[in-house]
Each structure stands twice: as C-alpha cells, then as structure tokens.
Image (cartoon, rainbow, N blue to C red; front, side, top):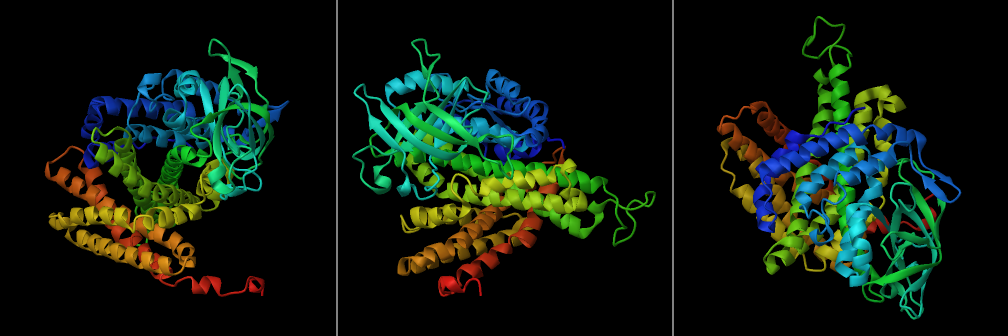
Length: 595
C-alpha cells in the first residue's frame, strides 16, 4: 500500500490551531511559515519515496543474525544513509553539537510521517534522539565531546538497555553489574533483552545507555546507575576503534516490526563510563524515557494514519450491494461500500481519532519545547510539569488508538483485510507492540495516577481542566454552541472525577490500580473533545473568511460533530467502570479463576 503524508491537516494543526510560527519565535528559532511548510513537504517526499517502499519487504525479510552481526532487510542501510545525509537525523539535536535544534512541534510531524511509512525503519533512529537528550543533560564534558556530535548527526546510533529476563517494569530486580576501574571507567557485565537496534548494519557505531549496579549500591531502584557502553571505543581521531565486549546473542522472533532488530545483548566485562551521578541512573534514564514515550505515542498516530488511508481508499473502490437509500452508482454493478452507514461509522471513527490525536500530540510537543527553550524560567518549569502530565496519556491513548484504527482498517477491508497482500494485517501486528514497550499502557495509567495526580494532589490536572473549560466557555459561535455545552459538561465531570479518584486512592491503595486505566481513557477522550472544539472554532472562523478550500473546513466541522456525538460518549462507560471500585476486582480468590 502507499503512504501519503496528511500535509493539509498537519498545516492546519500547526499554523491555525497552535500558531507554530509564534511558538518558534518565542523559542528564539525564528522559523517562518514558508520554511516550516518546506520542511514538511520535503519530509513527505522522503517518507513516500524512500521509506514507504521498505515497509512490506522489511516485514517479509526481517533481520538476520550471522556470525554475531545483525543484517537488516534489503534497502534499510541505503535509506538510513540518505536519512543522515539529508539532515533528518539532526533535526532536534543541540546546535552546539551541529544539530538543527528544531522544535518538537515541527519535528514531530515529520516523525509521524516516517512512522506511518515504515515503523520498523524509524525504530533504528528513534532512541538515538532520546540518548542525545540524556547525554546532553547528564553526561560529562568528555563524554559529550567524544559522542554527542556523532549521535546528533546520526552517524552513530543509540540504544536504551533497561530490561532483563527477570526485570521488566520492576527495575529493582536488575542484576547487571558495573565494576569500577582505576582509570575511571567501569566494566559492565550482564544481559539485556528487548533492545531495539541493539545491533544493526546501518550505523558505524552503536552507543548503549545501560542501567547497572555498582558493587556498593543500595538495594532497589535507588542503587541503579547509568553507563555509556559503545560497541566500538572511539580512537584518537574520534573514529570507531577497538571492539568492545558487547554483542548480540539472539534476535527475538516477533509478532510485528519484523524489519527492526530486537536484540538480546550480552555485556561481558564491557568497558563503559558513568553518566550522571552514581546511583542516580533511573533519574537520568527518565530524561530518555519521557522522550521515548512521546515518540511511541507518535508511532501509534503514524500507524493509525496509514491504516485510515488504507481503509478509505478501499471503501471508495470496493463495490458491494446497493445503498440503503437507493443506488449511488446506478451505472455500476453495485455501490462503493463508502455509501453504507456502518462503513462510514468505521471511517469517521478512524478519521476523528487520528486527527484528534494529532492535535493532542502537537499540544504535548509544544510543552516539551517550552520546557527546554522558553526564555522565562518559570514558564519552563510549568511546561515541564504539564508535559509530564500529558506524556502518559499521549503514550497510552495514541497507541490504543493505533491498534483500534488498524483493526477497523482490517474490518473495512472485510476478508481482504485478513490477507497479507493488502497490508492491513501488518499494521495491526506492528501497532500492537506500541501498547507494550517503553512501559505498558497499564504502567502509563499507574504513572498518571501515582506520579502525577497523587504527587501534587491533582493541581496540574485541575489547571489543565480549568484552561480547557475557559476555552469552551469562550466559544461564541452559534454553530458550535451545543458542542461547547457538552464539552463544558464533560470537563466539569472530569474535574469532579479527579477529586473522587484522589479520595478513593488515598483511602485504599488497591484503588490506584483499579481506576487507573479507565481514568486515563476517560481523560484521553475528553482531552480530544476539548481539542476538537478548538479545531472546530478555527475551521468555522476560516469559513467566515471565505477561503478557497472550503471543503476542508466543512469536513473539519462535520468531523468534530461526529466526534462529540458518536465517540465522546465512550467516556461515560469509563466513568461508570472506574466508579465500580477495587472490591469487585480483588474479592475473588486467585484459585477460583479457573472455576
């Protein structure tokens, strides 16, 4: 199948909903609208012409491990060279290390394109950007000098090595050890699993960021340190030198993303260097993980977009039965299935979820940008808190949407959706991992409740809700009056529900796990409703100006109407479910589950 970047909608989100040019000026970038659009257009071309053709063959061929070396599918290495040479790898890198320093709001649109074109290809470069963030913030001057420039350019790639066979989410069980050496380096020993891009033939070096324990480390997560362990140690000229004692022991055989190497990595007294302070590795790694979780949310969005495109194209072409209201195409043997209400229900569900999630991604990207680059220190701090609140919602909700929208694409195709040649079943398989890695969506929901909501008594969330309520109340468009009223009611319900969740979770810790998934889902649907209202307001105002592309803005209003009438009611089910409490979950004896 083909991939076509949704440039018109991306421009609408960036320019008309979030005023990206003003945002860039605030950050000191000075990018104008023409330059931003040029970046998007060139990115769309690269995604369509270079990356998208890799998607099917990557799934068919997969990766191979031969004599300790991972070989990627045909065409991946050549495409990666173009990715680096054309400067896409350095988009967000710090300028002092020859990065372009572009805002996340701009780069996120390009990355969504790459993820939609081929998720497997994007995985190789994704964690490099996260590694750059962690090293730039926590690394020593020597490590920055030796590694950051090559990582920023994409000449070298980075990985994140957390998970072990016995230690996934619970890093307190981590066993990898680090032994200090007289020269200030460390010897790292242990095995890590599920390492994306742990070995590959795309870049000339791979820089692993590894969590390990020092000999005198305290027990639990407080005794974890972060180490930089290169595949090749840099020589005196900065080129890859001696081979380190780190290797890929096996490739995982996976359900999806088969073109991406998911490795079992063995560190056998491998030489490494401490990043940040001893026993503070988890705090350092969270710098990397927050970015990675945002990126995974974009993965769900990218797959959802291409799945919607596939379903829409098929629905326009496939002839089946006559419309219930009478023939739509009487000159043909049957009508296109897009004329049937249930097919339209699926397509509109896809469209409104995808476009709503694009709004939410841009909202989160804006806060990530302001956290890093706003000239006002207080605004940076506030943006950091807002970004931290949004990240678990973005990661979990957008990846759940990716799986739902790809499943709907299979359904629109009917029996053909179950057949490999149409590409829909690959999207379902590829998207499924996004709900699992970088912290399962259940873990994201727990994070939202424990580390965000309970940590500050709901202060940050209540501020967000209040801002959205003020936006809804300010809507004076008669055409949007009913939608604004409903959105306002949902926001008030969200505010009240937040208070209830805090109360029950403080009274009974089991309630934290009992309410978390439903509360995150509820939050996602209501957030999208508020953002859809904002987008509808922009579309309505544009129509009043008499634009040339009136059809685009009318479609926006119609999509917003569908969302609040047919999708937003899902929030009610999550509201009622979480009010059911923990007792009905925990009352049954575990021995009774198989009765």
